[in-house]
Image 1 (tube, rainbow, N blue to C red):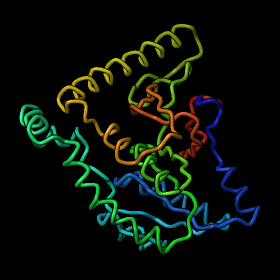
Image 2 (image 1 turned 90 degrees about the horizontal axis):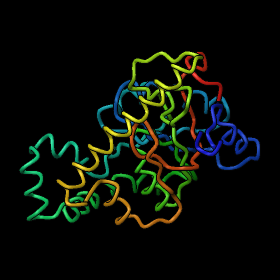
Image 3 (image 1 turned 120 degrees about the vertical axis):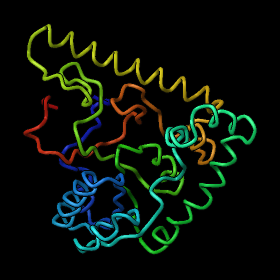
Image 4 (image 1 turned 90 degrees about the vertical axis):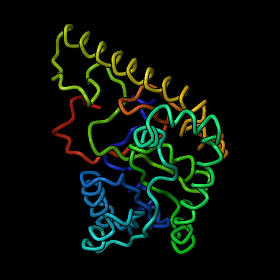
Amino acid sequence: MDDGKSIFEAKNINKRVNNGEEKSIFLDPFPAMGHINAFLNLAKWLLSQGFRPVFLISQEYEGKVRQEGFARYVVAPMLLIPAKSERKQKGALRFFLDNLYKGRDKVARDYMLKTKETYKKAFREENCKQVLLDIHYISKAIFYHFSGLEVNQVATAMLPFKHSKSPPFQSSHVPGKGVISSIGISALWRLNRMKRDIQNSIGYILSLGQTDLNIMLKTFTQRRYAFDRNRALGWGIKGMSTVATYPKSFDLVDL
């Protein structure tokens, strides 16, 4: 379970409050209503603990955060256009040819020069030392680390870590206590990994190695993070603390 570094009650955050450290903290949710609602609940809890939550939010959901009365900055949620979205929009052949003749790396870096500018005002005006980042785009942790912020990841659904008693959350399998269930769960994780490996291989070939993660690593040099492939969502970061926003009654494993 991620070297035992996952957390469920944000104890490390609470400890910072008790120590009298800086109480402002950035929240960066994935731009989808379910994720926004989960982060709003987390923000209310942080407020009750003495923190001042500051949202880094897309234009689409700025009104929702404003209605709840939280501080907010409108930013570009995606630092670069995901390769998956590019392929869907252009088609696989055109995507490959564009990479062959133009080079995705340069285009993506030029795009990021614009998108990262949208974060400068928040970084300049707020004295925040850390950010709670939605696990759905964890590669942004590289950008935040490069910008001098401590990162904790937030899971708004079931945790994505590989575990012998919990299937990948994309699966409809309900785990049991017997050996057959454990074998089935192991098979589901293998299938999940195989599908992602195939998808990653296709993406690597079509992008000529200029994947989202590789571009982020080239753009924002860092040596801190080690990446883990055993996640239901794909890539994850080893050893990073995790805050789970869903009720404990829905946990399938006693963690």
